[in-house]
Amino acid sequence: MLSIQELFATIPEIHVAHRGASAQYPENTMSAFINAAHLGAHMIELDVHLTADEQLVVMHDATLDRTTNGTGSIGSLRFSDMEYLDAGSWRNPASEHMPIPRLGDVLRWLPNHLCVNIELKGTPQNKEGLAKNVLKEVIAYECEGRVLLSSFNHELLAVIRHMNTEIPLGAIYCGRPWPLLSLAETLQLFSLHAHIADIDREWAQRVLSGGYEVVAWTLRHASQVHHCRQAGVKALVVDDLSLLTTPYNHSHQNLVI
Image (cartoon, rainbow, N blue to C red):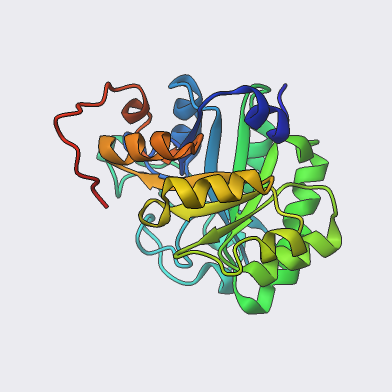
């Protein structure tokens, strides 16, 4: 059983399944997570929102509309309002009746060899409740060592760090933080999560030499994988895990963003 720190220290390239194996299965469902494990992922990435009755549901969007047969804002609904919705057939009729997982469902299943990157969504109004409940679930399932908590909401990360001084945290960015490592130092971050368009070798090496890891999201073309490898980035977030095992054709040098 590898911790997040051990994973980054010992695995030369970390394959992160974005919302599970989402190129082949409905995103953020147990099917996507289980199949990501079968396809060789070292880590799965998922998103969590807090319901009105403080249940943690695994879904990217703030509303049910895109990926279920329901409608409405997750934060204004109880889990019982969405428990029996179909979260699969929007992607494929064969995936009909896949339920919306709760975070506890994923952590209960999580195999010993797999780590998980939990991206916290939520709203400015519920960030304390979201932080408190995520930490509570992670600790209840004894997964603290195998969980990396990340968010675009850096105030939320500050709330988590105040509640827990040990759990690994990652700040997600569009663009580049400036000063480069100020937030990382303040919040004792483990990692910076950067969009592929914002990564080059000089920037990545400055972050790594500062003692922080770089996580690149979301890679959908072979040129992007090659670019990250050349920059020295080892944690690669993909929808399609086969992208990371496909030989790169050097005749196509242009980076696709």
